[in-house]
Length: 171
Image (tube, rainbow, N blue to C red; front, side):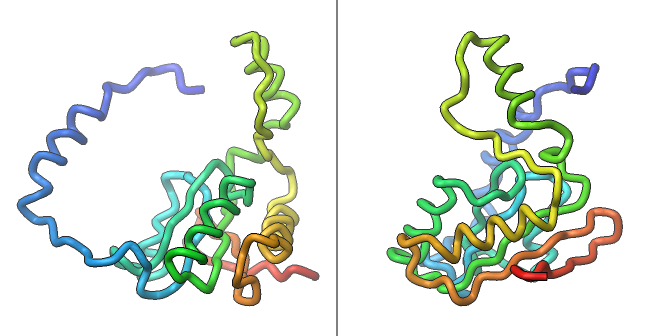
């Protein structure tokens, strides 16, 4: 963890929010016009709008630590597909992911030692980037709650050079 505590960014964010209505253009629908949902890591280096040429209203963006497909991601995808018309799913992991730097057991032990409680959720850390993309692909494709599992693709974004490589389910 970093040694220096940065100044809180929240006040600046709230100042920006006050000015936002001046340039805000409402979007008519919660349903994405491109009918795609993207599941990606929350890493601040991933600019999904720039990477995929997206604009507001094009896609549902579902982000979490590692971009892993958890029960909550399946919940979001089920709602996205069943209530808002998405048909395609794009999964994006990335090189240099922090989820590769610890094990589930390590984080669970740390959290339990500090709080006295063992998490009820799994951190979903991983050591093999491509295999975790494959696991996420399998979870989406096998979910009984999702209507559309044919157009599901997984990728690794390369933070070093901005490249994107596809990961096939079976290599």
